[in-house]
Length: 185
Image (cartoon, rainbow, N blue to C red; front, side, top):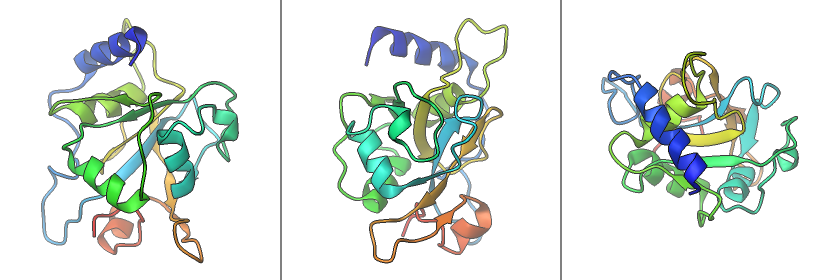
């Protein structure tokens, strides 16, 4: 991780609220299922609405490092991918569902118990009074939650199988019914 990325994310941690939005491991109730969402900054990637498993594998293994190679993105600059702590539920679901992915050196790994909150805050809207910039070219994954203002959860399609699955939004209904492809088995 570069110094600039580290400083940006550490500054973002100070913006993270003490009471985080519900995440996969925190929300419990009848019929609850864990899931992973893929987040981007809304202002930074307004045209991007969906992403496939194969594209996610390529982004997080650093085979794709520029947004112009991501279908649906209008950006033409470098991708800044972020992933949560290795021991997180989100990481376990991502590895199990996406398939074999070797995280490349372009991926910033955020460690610790607040790793998912840091990613969620960094990809959301940063207040104009903050001393940091929004991560407009970032993409990250974390346990299911309502996205923070300024970020958007992408629809995900499982193209690991034939025929490829449809692109599905990560909403509670699709997760509970097991139709969202990044839902825990």
